[in-house]
Image (cartoon, rainbow, N blue to C red; front, side):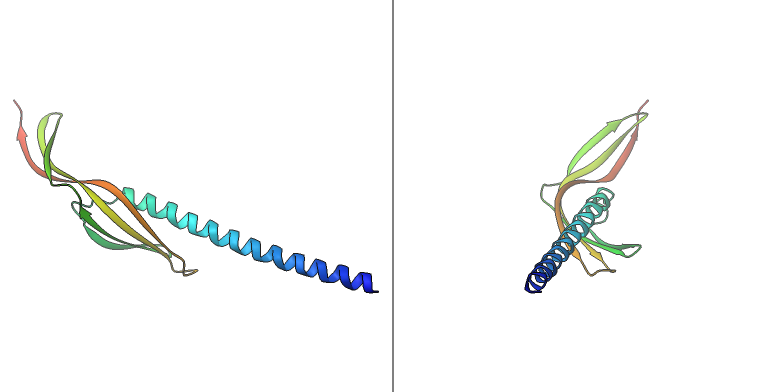
Length: 123
């Protein structure tokens, strides 16, 4: 009987530890998914045109702020006409908040931003 009690206690402790580990792994995966969602969302932000903002996609809320870390410079692309852009490198801070489970992640990246400055037709 003592052996069965000891074995039962050991199994109970092992299952408790296993559940704790599964819970921690699940939270770590949720945080990683939030970070990946934040990075994907940040790719669509043009900090020169929208230096700060807020957007909600499903149950996930994204807020961002940006700050230029280089001066604006003029750059152009040639296709059928010459378009001149103002371009700068920005520090972009994105906060991702999952409303379902309350998790929140902060992402800091550097990203280029641009604004159309003027067009000049080329003959």
